[in-house]
Image 1 (cartoon, rainbow, N blue to C red):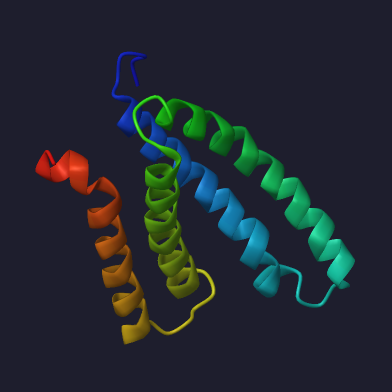
Image 2: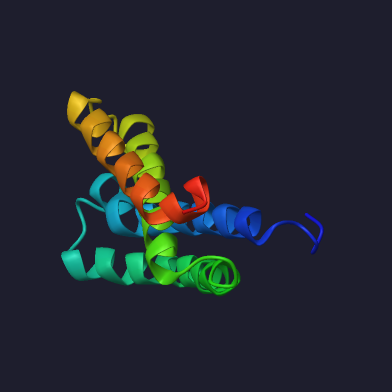
Length: 122
């Protein structure tokens, strides 16, 4: 991606990649290390989380050039839910429920309100 690409696009892509790492750090051990002691899972998760931070910190710095912290946080939450739902369905084989839909709709409302000034010009 060229350096001239939108800070929004860079932020979204980096946050998506960082969130994949963080989701594996937080929940991957439930499938892969469930037979190991919790501190082993914690150390492995901590190692995975390092890669998340190497992507998340630049994402937030780039995003903060064009968004405020509240907007960055809501954007992160939307990305988190999207990654988490995919992870829980395809990796952990959890069942998709309507609660994910309701949570997603609440987050869409949060996106609207936090970005309302930009969206409506108000």
